[in-house]
Image (tube, rainbow, N blue to C red; front, side, top):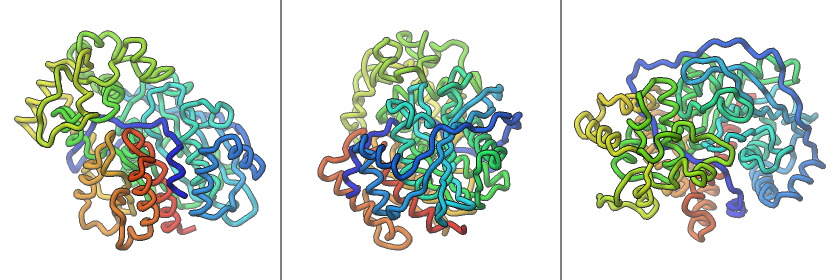
Length: 478
């Protein structure tokens, strides 16, 4: 049955940026003035509305069927609320953001009383309209598919879901998004959590002591970084499940800059470079990092209405070429999708790439190049979780290479409370054997062409999400 869910398309992807750091790096949580306005109700879902949703959307029906098979068919009513809260931008500037809260309702034990909370970080999107609170009122909103997963896997099963849209999206005043900015994104995640706690009595959100954190792609990185930040703050995270994120970012970006261009590079690169520029002033003129063709507009290219596709149509960004020239001959050889990262017109300036690669060849793990140094500072191999973490992804992922997950697992090697679920390798020993059916269904879909190419990355959010639900259930204390 699981393989039927491959029809669900997620509007998420991942970056080519960030990485390693020193052991004494800390995350500072910026204080802000809490928003005085409590979250507002959008809708309340009941048995009849679930039926309507499933009748109108075959992919949602499949998703709920799979979740029912995993967790049982009994579902909670769910109150959908939109939150709006104050936070900060990448330079510490005051701004606002928004998101969704999904509150389980009902009289059964799984739907009433103190509920476990899932703090969720969404995947990369280049469309500024992304708003997780609008999945019912605006079916075409680019956040609808990911919001439906949160409803089917968590909220309808008794978890209070707290999921920010991120600063720079929806009605945020910030005119850019602090993409993969560890300090800003973890600060915002915590601001969202604090906002819900501040208004919990008003909105009827009774939260138990069980706090879980998860996210996909960009959100996988943000989820892991948020677990780290909450741990440093003294807040207990019961467990986390980062999915397909760029955790070991220095190695990841070094690999891309060497020529192994990942899928979606012309989305991720301008968003990340803009975030670095806003927070760290990485250049005097955009031509220092962008080719002359795109330097005038790349910094402000994304997010925008219509996302990357609209930017390409407008001539603001290239479709796939991030570097100039023809694909190099490397060992191992480039795959076809990586070869499309080269051509004319291309996004990044040759001089920028040359300076980066020179630093890579000369300094390796101790960068002196400013941008490469900032990439290293963002790496998450500088902490050890004190509560359980499940890493999950696919070794065939063309967007966020699985080496990120392997590198993090290697850094945590021997830690009893961390483990990795590779969907492409059927687990046979504890604790992974509990997830064997999910991995086997994934491999069946992969083998018969049901999941392929760029869809692999987004679909890890579905399959790993199913695994994460089971993992969190096993870790609950209430």
